[in-house]
Length: 243
Image 1: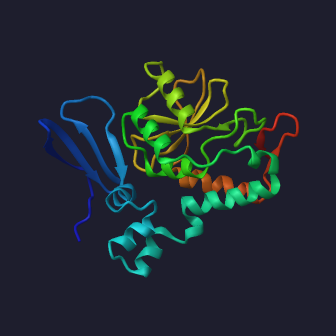
Image 2 (image 1 turned 60 degrees about the vertical axis):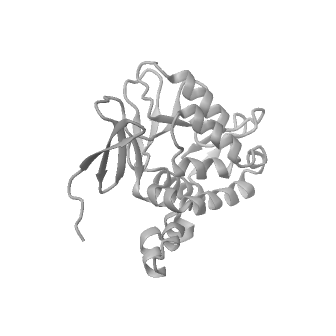
Image 3 (image 1 turned 180 degrees about the vertical axis):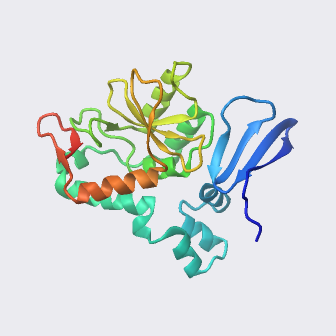
């Protein structure tokens, strides 16, 4: 098997538009030929998901006829997947933050996800679809935060905040909001890079902080700390701070 040791770019034409498609070991990215804007990128797991209609690597490989051993090596156990981590967190919240958990909204449906996709002008990353299908934000009257002082955003809130941030200094159109402290600070996904790294975008700072190379990596660390008792809820403000 020949491995991709460096990016390879090829041109294709779709409906008369020339596109530059770049392949590397992390995935593929597409941009119009001659454009200086950020390309749209998909990780190889996302490509598998798009081809098979499956939300995780294990299921996608199984749909392609991959063996059980290959599936296990590629994706690990279900408990370590994004879906598994969200399920673990949901169980913990239901037991230890009952009031907050009760204020979480049901998962986003196809109509809400399609509306967000239209607002962003690009396909939703699989990670974001999985995240919003878990809980589509939290009740607006709920006093409490999901992480630190950040509240869980709905698909509609993401679309509104994304629109409001366009053409503002220090903001990149490839960033998609995920959590909001409603003070001008966001936790966001960088959809221009393979894996969609997690960013903390702070008001007054020129550059965001990259806190994890993927949403799954970020969530795994958060869930482990939560389960280990390293986070506490402020009884008055409802914020959820790490110790």
